[in-house]
Length: 386
Figure 1 (tube, rainbow, N blue to C red):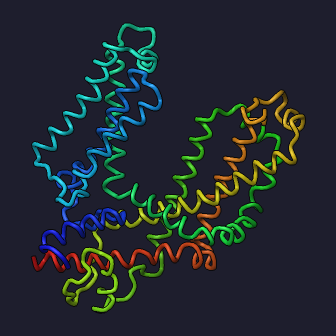
Figure 2 (cartoon, rainbow, N blue to C red):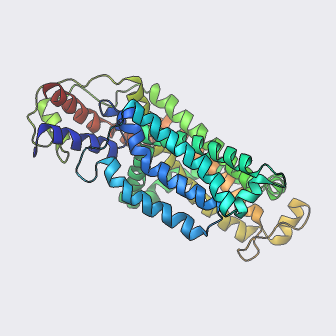
Figure 3 (cartoon, helix red, strand yellow):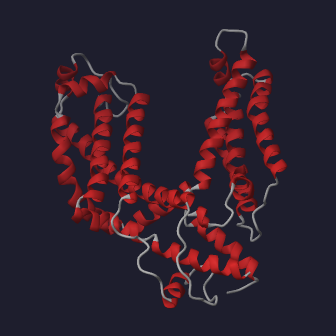
């Protein structure tokens, strides 16, 4: 261990945040940790919203918020080596009020000075433009604050980063995963691809509605993961740890080299249990997305080979809407996305409920929770002794 106990605890807390388990940090509350860590996201969202009101270019609308976020991020997350800032209750109220004013009042001011296409569309033909733009800014602020709150409180972004990182580390296992999963999911979806009614429906269905269906299926995977994990008949943390288990778990963490004392793994409180469930759910969703991407490419290739334009027109009942991709019917891509999402949901649920698939795909994810739990036990004992 290097540095003072307080510095070691600070680095350990940052390690939990990077491990997508921020609720394992003692005192990870709105005032102490969550809202200060949200400031880069809220700032970027506010700048993006104001640039949209002014109808700035797409590059500027993305580049400027990302640049500002990258400058603020080290100071609010402790990446600069210092403890992240803490807020008083008054400070918390001030932060919320300031950002609300920026989202609402700033949008109205920008619309007054430089009304862009977005704000004109929001206002419509009525004369209540400032009121409408302000109301839209308030709704966007509430949505941004809620999304930032959930993502920061439960480490959603870090969980996605870990899941994608694990995916790239295991690229050699992807062909095996496809070989094991595709025959099963294709059995239930392949015949739907040649159903004329689906082609007809999806030719008329707009992309936003297709995305809403995909979001609904994502919710189903999340609920299924929560149900399986909460009812899992094995303890992912495993047996009580020995001192050597604790020391091994702390290797490569800020607690490496600390004096290990015998300690038990503390029971998780409700927020910590939800954090673990969120981590597992995100990893399952990423696995399902990989399988879904493979299915999407398969169905697009199948459609290009087997479904002629005339056949698609017969199924749909009129000339289908053409895409920019060599005039291929847009319905093909919508149908491929829909069936791929069905297949991803089927794979995600099968990998958790089928005994063989659970051992191969889900058990390793579940077992990855043990190490942070052991580090958390050492962290708690160190805090108690500090």
